[in-house]
Image (cartoon, rainbow, N blue to C red; front, side, top):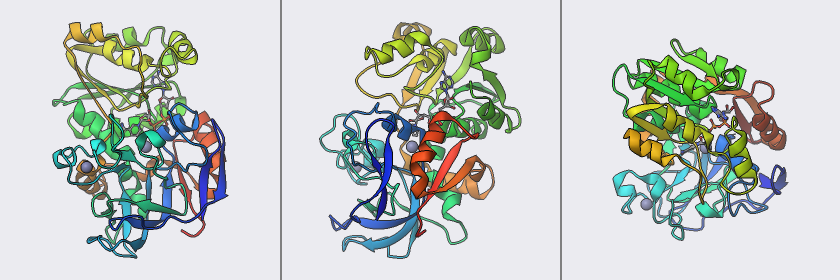
Length: 381
Ligand SMILES: NC(=O)c1ccc[n+]([C@@H]2O[C@H](COP(=O)([O-])OP(=O)(O)OC[C@H]3O[C@@H](n4cnc5c(N)ncnc54)[C@H](O)[C@@H]3O)[C@@H](O)[C@H]2O)c1
Ligand SMILES: [Zn+2]
Ligand SMILES: [Zn+2]
C-alpha cells in the first residue's frame, strides 16, 4: 500500500509499505477514504515528540471502510463505514470505565503518561497511523463509530479529533451562561473551541492569533471578537482592558508548545532548557481573572515547561487539561453536526491526494495559501 513515511525532522515521503493485517482477534483493518493533517502532526513533523521513528506513518484523524475483522469483533463487519477516534482504548480498564479513553492503561502499557494514539511516536505505543491506504484498528468494538447512511465520511471526519478536542476545551472551562472566554489559537482546534464556547453558553468569545486569515475565519462566527497579538504591545494587558480590567472568566490554550510571540520562550526552547515555547500557557494564566479557569488542550511534550504556577496559585485559578477523550463526545457532537450547529466542512480549505502529503504538511506548517485544514484522499478511496 501507499503510506506517508517520516524521514526525520521536516521530511516526509510517500512510500510503498506492507498492508497491515489482523494481529489480534479484536482488530479490524480499515481502508482509508479520508484522513486529515492535525496541528499535533506538526509537533511530530518538526521533531518535538520523543521517539518518533524514521519510517513510521503519521495520521490519527481518519475515516474509511472496514475491509477485514478479527474473529472476536462483534459490532463491525466488512463494508461498514467508520470514523475512528485518535485514542486507542480497550474499553474496559480502570480509565476506560470512567470515560477517560485517553488514559487507557492497556493500549500503551509501558507508559506512565497516557494510552495509545495512532501514528504518534513510540511514546504513545508505536502504532501506525492513518495517512495511508489501510490502517490496523485495535479494540475495534470500542473506538470506531459507524457512519450514518445519510452522511459522508467528510461530514464526520473531524469527530476523530479536532471537534471533540475543541469541545472538551470549552467543557473543561466549565463556562457559565454569559461568561467571557478567551481562546488562544485560531487553528482548527481553537476555531472549534470558540464555536463550542458559544454552544456552552458563553456571552463573549475573544479569539487570539497573529495569522490574519485565521482571525478573519474566527470572526465569521457572529459575535466572536478578534485580537491579533502581533498588533498590540502587551497582549495580556490588552485582553485585560477588554475585560473590565479583571480578566476573562475562562482562558483556553489551543496552541501548545510551538507558540510564537515570545523571544525568550523561543530561546529557552531552542537551547533545550524547556520543551518548545510555553508563552501561551503563561498568557492564559495571566489573562484569567482571579478565581477563573484555564483549560489547556494545546499539546506540551514531556519533560517540562516554564509555567507561572505562583500566579495561578495566588489567583486561585482552576487549571484543567488533557488529551481529548474523544469517544465520550462523539454521539453528542454528531447531533450538533446533523442539526447544523457546527459547520465542520467549512474548515476544509484543501483536499489533496495522499501522494501530495509532503507538500500538504509544508503548506499547513507555513500557513500558506490560507490553509486551515488539509484532507488527504488515497487514490483508491
Ligand atoms: N488535547 C488534544 O487532545 C489535542 C488534540 C488535537 C490537537 N491538539 C493540539 O492543539 C493545538 C492546536 O492544534 P491545531 O490543529 O489547531 O494547530 P495549528 O497549528 O493549525 O494552530 C495553532 C494556531 O496557534 C496560533 N498561534 C501561535 N502562537 C500563538 C500565540 N502566541 N497566541 C495565539 N495563537 C498562536 C498559530 O498561528 C495557529 O493558527 C496543537 O498543540 C495540537 O497538538 C490537542
Ligand atoms: Zn489531532
Ligand atoms: Zn482501557
